[in-house]
Image (cartoon, rainbow, N blue to C red):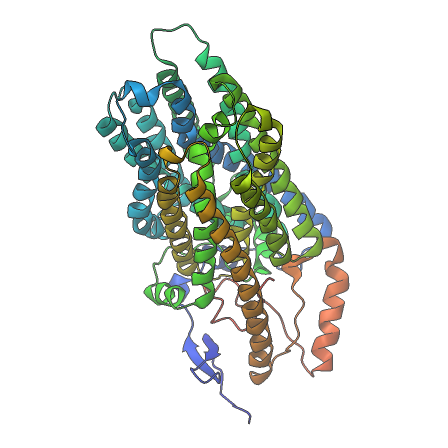
Length: 543
């Protein structure tokens, strides 16, 4: 049975609860994406961009934006990990920490991020993202400097809470910036590059800690660690206010023509860039979208793994029979594993265009390693075997950025995207709050409770990946039928996952598909209307 609905300019065609096409009002002109506002006043020729233009502008963006994103995330990860480094230099003894107080110092950062997530979601819609990031950057660096003067659990806990609160927006902001500047094909590698700063911070942080631990100073080694890392963040935050652009349309390093090309590159994502109007309808849609909840559960599962290992990693290594300085140096190897696994998985995703199979296989490595570590004996005699298994476990560090990339590439509407970041970070915070509590000091050096939780969560993660993939396939098949019901071409080429060198050939293929279904139409015309992925029948979900 066909459903013929008269479509007026400005109307959007969506589905009713029975799956029939129906109409809803488009966002008013003043509430559209910032990209739409720029394109409306752009006086140059509006055309299909070429491979050469795409490559030229992408190189400019890579060269300018990526270093800024990387040093911000590097500092965040380094500053958050300072507690872990300080733990091997007598912090617990000097601050008179007892029982689970060290674990709570690890967890309180995530309590703060949990509390601050609603503010983060709202701020990332309403405020210029560059100023918000820079302000948070400056504030958390200052908090870490002050922490160097704290001498007891209460003082440390208060400053760790502030540190976590100011860091709450950073990774969500990085995801928004990546989606704002790069196509869905390019996002996995860029996301994994900046996320690899986690590994680089582990390597450089270990070297820095090793050096500061040997420094002759009136300050304790952990005080030097807090002060040095905090001052570095403060020093970098100040120029970031001016260096980081708010949006591709306001980027000083791009000409007007380059800005047009930058936005046309992103058009094919169908996820938009930024809209400063906070839309409650998109919040409601996000909270009722099954795929958003599945992504949140995935992040929770891997955060149980990462939260415990990141907080107790040095102590686990120490339990293998290493002294404090060997522990610091060996802690660099997980950083190298993280960098390698992040880049390798991103390159495989870029080549194959599929995220879910790569994510599934990557999850099997830490699952096998956690099972082996649970069973193996401890002690100096087994040091080499234990270290090998522990380093395989570190492959878990590539899983979170893949989930982030997959979730963001499958979500459209700016408020919905920022709400999704809030959901993802609720999962991340809850996982990281719970995880250190599962590593009980009394169970050292085996930590069986923590490893059992790792096994359960990694098994659940693999199941969620399969379920989410099947749901994405269903949504894509449904959108084909929606487009045909609206008199449009059903089969669309997803240019956002293709290399620009193939675009001209694929454009010809798309025209052939249009003609085969009796249409001549422009595609991705709603990309900057601030539609959600559910509202936009042209949206193609990435598998």
